[in-house]
Length: 100
Image (cartoon, rainbow, N blue to C red; front, side):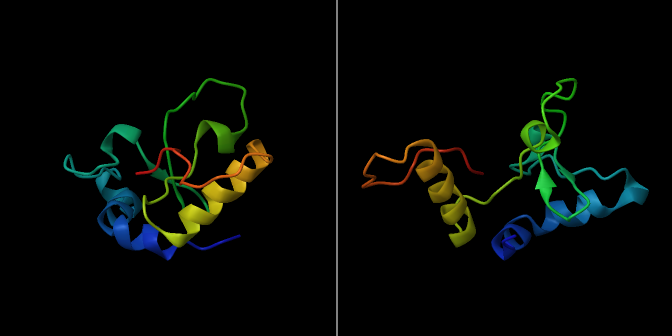
């Protein structure tokens, strides 16, 4: 598994807030992650909360990992997924997947 240190830097305040169980693990209203209702999983990754909560889909699908917009790890993950989904297309520009 790849470690994305850029997410830890970019979302440092959110990680601190979400890790604070004594204060109900809430993030600032100014955070770009607020609408995602984020939480930290057992591996220390920030995931989207409440998304498809009642679905029978796997945990990883219901609660995707939050990635930073500009990081080498994010680029590698997007490229790998792009090649998996569209193996025969020649890409000359970045794939338009959603990142924060």
